[in-house]
Image (cartoon, rainbow, N blue to C red; front, side, top):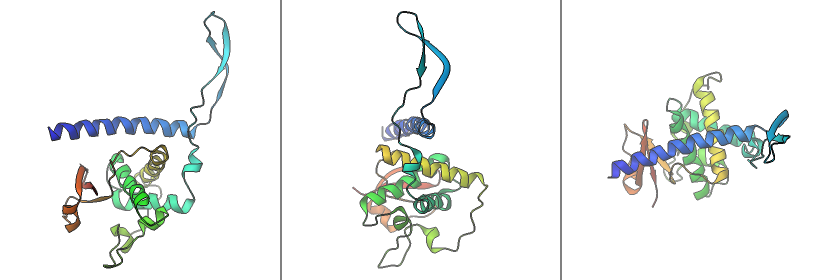
Length: 195
């Protein structure tokens, strides 16, 4: 029964992702007037018409400033660069959920946060010597696209992750995972939330 619920949740999440991608595309495209396009009204008379404006947020207003967008994109790249697109989005959603629940007021503050008592970075790559990002790579382009989708989802109040605030790789079992509610495994990450 639980497995069935999980698969339905992932199926729903998949459809929401597709819907969100369509919303992003609409958000990137301003309303256009189609010249010479005609539509028959009820009386059969043709008239020019305009594509509707769906009142989508302008993508540039969602990207905050370049520094915040860069922090989110880099975190997605270094934490989930080899993961699927939905895996990348979930990592980005964790950052946004932590932003809403923490004292940090910026995305960069969340990404660069360290445990004050232990000096451990919340995201491991921040405390490591990481290689330069290959700017032309598919992983980087996907990370940028994922970050945009995460920001659109956040702006629309949609959280596909069901409140995920933590995750870890499948090959480790950190102590903190016992105190949180396991939500889902996507690729090589297991996602959790606080209850």
